[in-house]
Amino acid sequence: MNTEILNYIVRGNETEWIPLKEDGVDTRGIFVKVLRFDEQTKRSPTILLKFAAGAKYPYHNHPGGEEVFVLEGDAIFEGQKLSAGDYLYTPPDFKHEVTTENGCVMLFIIPEEVEILKS
Image (tube, rainbow, N blue to C red; front, side):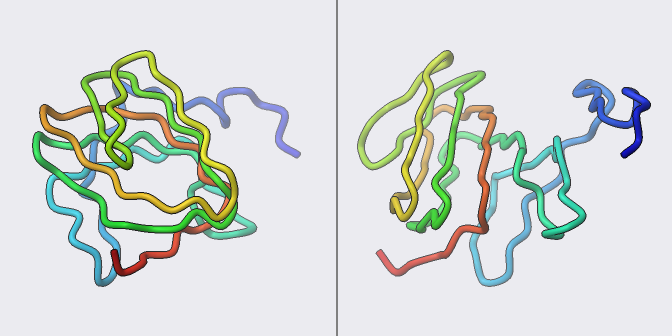
């Protein structure tokens, strides 16, 4: 294990937002900053997502659950509006969609890859 702490720090102000791209998924208006990439699973379980006003992520399942913390703005999960400072834990196999009216920035911890579902 590398014991140099600098190898584990992500400087948010020095990291660019990049458009979220997922095969077959409309992710217009959604941007990502990767906070942690897991070499073993080849995925990012800890990310920041920025949603532009009106952006939507489709109905999906979380096989491993998820944790969400709203940093800025507001987001709507299954009809429930979360605002800056709100936290959401969804247990494994919880299904929902995400949208925002005004835009938002959220911290996501997603232990397993999501599965896109038909709503």
